[in-house]
Image 1 (cartoon, helix red, strand yellow):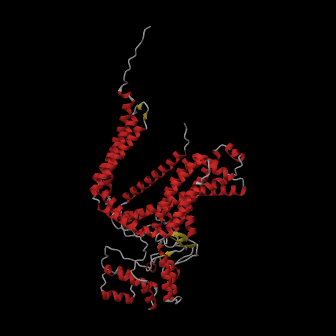
Image 2 (cartoon, one colour):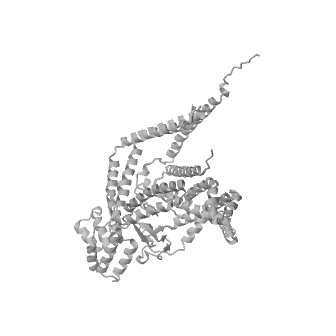
Image 3 (cartoon, rainbow, N blue to C red):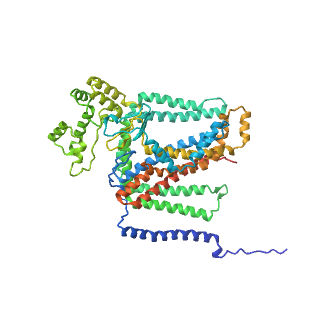
Length: 623
């Protein structure tokens, strides 16, 4: 029998898929670089022709405008200004995602209810909310907020408004709430210890339950351990006061690190991450017989990972400013933000309660005492001699007036001392009430001193119940002091309500579709076992439905995150609103837009990564 041997011939270059793949990808890369090389100089020429500069110096410069609300209403630099906008955006996003998920789940289940009223109410909510444009809904809730009680910032009798639980005013909405207080962070160390021990106890009890079938109550046991440590820590938390010293030492150590040393560490870290990714990629393609044959795409991914790692390493080594800023942020975080959290002192003025009692007995109010202390603390900044200071105190001249009349503003800022900063633990609302009593002779100096000592004794408690208060300053901006319950501006109120209800309507339909996608036999089987409708939803239907619900749920979370940019229409100080003001002040429109794009792109990718992580965890594992 004749055997025919066919010789395998290599295909020509123009038909070789490997060569075509690499040629296309390399051509795309160089084409993209060529476009960038052409467009960037043209953009620079156009900007120069219109006398528009492009740079990032504004990030380190003081912009000189106030922000309505946020972690810093008077930011020192452009970077801090944008940080305030980012935090405000994330406040709405994170709280809105949680609230919209809860609302959407409840409405979605209600849409399937056998109760006619519940079913129709859920239907009306969904069809109304999702068919009205989101921007119009923001305007609606902003108009609702405009009907609240009007406060006059220049009338001392209206600086505090509202009831005990809710204070709804045109300048803000206050809610009674439990607030972290002087010893909160020390107490949280005890709670954290309890949580760690509770976790290990939960694992042990759960393992025993699986092995023996005996009920060991793992969840209840873990919660009990946390509760015991929380109770112990409530009384014993001061022993962790030394942590503040350690944190401050860490901050000093971070500040002492040379910039070049951090550059090297970051560069080595980038290379290490690239090597780790490539090794993990290869491990995923190993079989018992050895490493599987790598495709062209596999090689391209590994080469790309290596190039990206080298690129980041080069960036860290070349751009020293990134490392310098990172060290500054680290030092500020430990030394200026975290370390003071372990110190319960909240008073700024160095004045004793006995001195306050004596001055009240001499006829001064708490506001006048605070104004005098403000003058004394800022005397050097204002350039006041001893005689000038005594004259200013006698004339009761506000420090802010002297500051505004200075021919040249100093680099340092004026330290404001309201009445509630006189005594540790005193809040703005309580200080205002006490001041009113003092001015109306409703309290004696001795009784005032006794009350202030009680307040000071409670200043070290980990938590404090705060009633609803809304405080506004003379500049008409809301004072979001954490000592007076939860305070939100009308802008935050309008944006949060609108995006939460709007997203919740879409989530409700997703939940309804997910429940309907579960086989009807599952519900019938649950009923046959004697489970109630609530039990069948909790233990059988929803766990299966969430595998279907979760992927489209992530898209709604992304929509909510990006829809917060509409807050500029209702004067909410999110990143777009703050960025517009920044670009008007500096003329750096293009850098601000790039900053916006980077923020929303990064936030969307992080949110997608979190959703995809949990989506993978919910997937069924098949053999």
